[in-house]
Image (cartoon, rainbow, N blue to C red; front, side, top):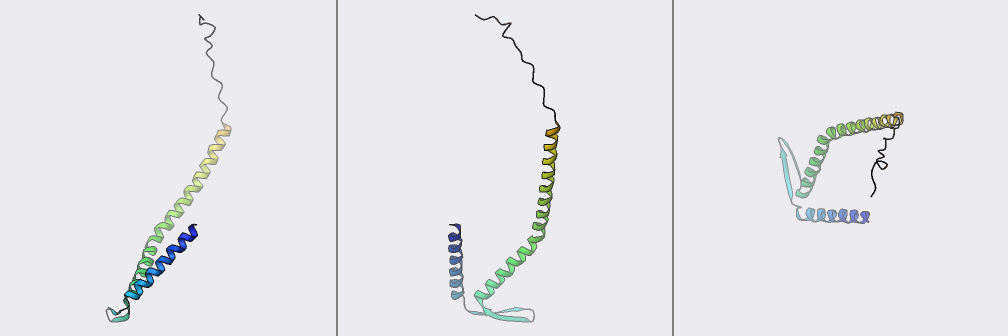
Length: 110
């Protein structure tokens, strides 16, 4: 079911991208210092969006990598602490049963 939903979303995005490209097909010139390039408006917009996404991923990658390393270290520590806890539970002697208060012999019954 999720696969069908995923395919429908991909199809909808592809259709919207095609409509966007058809409606923004005018030629534009991009100048940066002495460099210049020309292309359709839709191609330039999609290219700048892609570059922006890639830059965002590159900026986020070090912190995500650091968090994954910290998480794996914490998982190892947690496993080690669970093993120690289980070992201590096995070594702990069973508590002696609490003495019973047998007050029934001293109480008067009506």
